[in-house]
Length: 145
Image 1 (cartoon, rainbow, N blue to C red):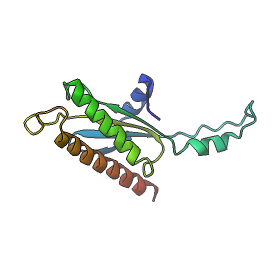
Image 2 (tube, rainbow, N blue to C red):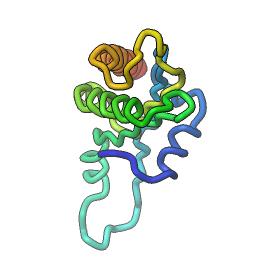
Image 3 (tube, helix red, strand yellow):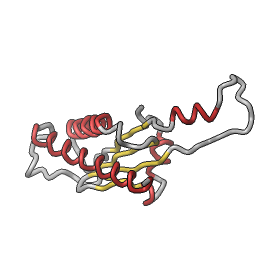
Image 4 (cartoon, helix red, strand yellow):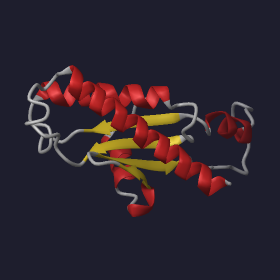
């Protein structure tokens, strides 16, 4: 599932330093875990609320923020977003549930990647995104172990 509302992005990005799951040279990965909201009242539909929470606890809601400050060309912003969403899809099985936001925090060197949509840039972003997701998964596994 993709994050779409501004409020969701602000909630994740505004959670502070404790929400930072991993960093790489160009990206920061923020994570806001699922909060259990249990009710003592009965559900009008008759569904058990605890079971509903358990089913959604592994759901990933992901978003990507690519500021124009760091990627001026729309072509590059789109390439970066597609690569990050693909990385989230590849690592969905190892990342814990909750809201995830990947944010670009530094520009890619124009001398190294002159084309905004080159195979070299795609490979570099894919490798960095995979390393970022793996680092976040390891950090999360360390918290729960």
